[in-house]
Amino acid sequence: MDGFNWVSKVDWAIVIAILSLLFTTIISFITIRYTKKSLAISANSLDASIKSIDTSILIYEKQKKDENEKISQVNASILKVIKSHVSEEIKINYTHSKGLSLLFLFASTRQNIEIEIEDVYSDLRMVIINADGDEKGFVYANPDVSVIDKYLHQLLYLDENVAEIAIRLKACHMIYTHKMNLLLLYIKNKLVLNDELNKEIKGAIEIMNSYNLLLEKLYEACASENAGELKRYIINPIESRR
Image (cartoon, rainbow, N blue to C red; front, side, top):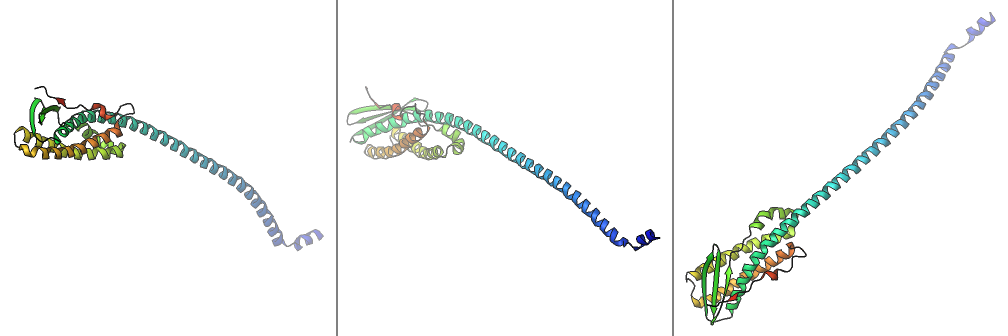
C-alpha cells in the first residue's frame, strides 16, 4: 500500500514535462552539433567554390591576355606589310612629283619660257622647258594612290596617325592631279599664252610643294628604320641636248 500511495502521490505532469525538457535538450544538442558540422561543410564548400571561381577568372583573364597579345602581334605584322607597300608607292610618286616641281622651279625665275610636252609611253610624258635659252626636261607620270586606297580602311583600324596623313594626302592628290593634268593639257595644246606661263607655273609649284610635303610626312610615318631618306629617290631634270 505504501508503494501504491507513493506512486499515486507523484505529479506525473511534472515528470512528463521534465522528461520532455530533457529529451528536447538532448535533441537540441544533437541538432546543434550536426548543424555546426553542416555549417563547417557549407563553409568549406563555399571557400572551394570561391577559389574555383577565382581560378576560373584568372584562367579567363590569362587566356584573354594571351589572345589580345596574339591579335596585337598579328596586327603589328599586317601594319608593317601595309606600311612597306605604301612606302614603295610613295617613292615612285615622289620621284615624279619632286622632279617636275624642280623643273618648274628652274623655269619660275626666268623671263622667256617655252614648254613642250611629248607623249613617251602610256601615261609617261616628256616635259621640256626652254627658259632664257637654257633647256631642261623631265619624264613625268601621274602619281598613283591605289595602294593607299586599298589599305586605307585597315589603316584607320591599325594606325590612326598614318591613316590621318593618308587621308590628307588623298585630298591633296585629287587637287594636284587635276591641276597638273589640266595645265599640261593646256600647254600641250597651246592654250596658255607665253606671258601667262610664269604665273601658272608658280601656282603649280605651290600645289606640288604641299603634295610633296605630305608624301614626305607619310613616308616618314611608314618607312622602316633602314629604308633611308626619301630624297634619295629624287631625279633632277636633265639638260636637253637637242
